[in-house]
Image (cartoon, rainbow, N blue to C red; front, side, top):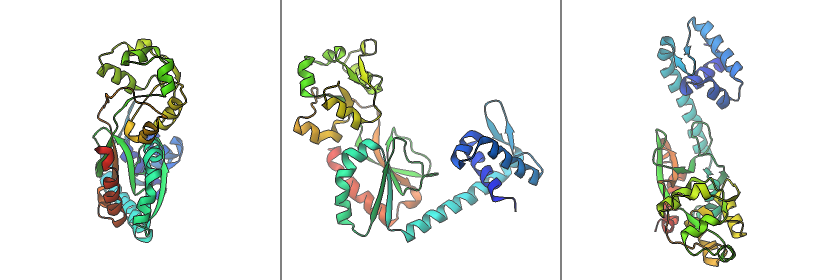
Length: 293
């Protein structure tokens, strides 16, 4: 039996077809991955990869070996995940920060009241969940329709967008119609949503006239800056209903843009019938129905 470290390196490179990505996944240097592949090639007596200028391909021997190795590691992964499912009553969730902060944190207590036997471990980050690497049961992601093979998705909310700002900002900059925003400062001025919304309104000269004040990486931060009067931000109003209802934020125009993006609950097909996934799916689809109304 070859060294497991070498076999693991082969599996990662064969799946990714990239020494760089495999090294990042394994937490190793690219040189270390190459060394492990070399050891395995010496053990087998044949090259496993064909290295070209900008890509890596499996050799004929590598093509024969890869399917069984990939399947074996899939079985191992699923075995550990299944064991985690049976020994743990904890539901591990990874969400995008905006959805996590603006909706999930305020509502997860209702799920725990309804299902006190299921503990929740919740994390957020800007990148979508990757079930090949991340130890999460389910994820809440931004999707434009295509999901990885074997992943199931359920729409929670359309990520529509429109300019949001403070009432004081509206008065200071005399915002009466969409074109008035061209002479006002924008938060995250390179945000594609801004140009898309103006184009939808028949205004094509936004990029040339953009006046930015700051670039932020989440809608939560953009809304906070807009509420402080720093500029207008393009955000999803359904996630900021409380701020809009209180008047801290103002939506001066009713028109909503949409580029096809939706927030979705996702999980591997193999987990569809897990009890904790089933009850969470039923709960969140019902709880977010008001956002889709």
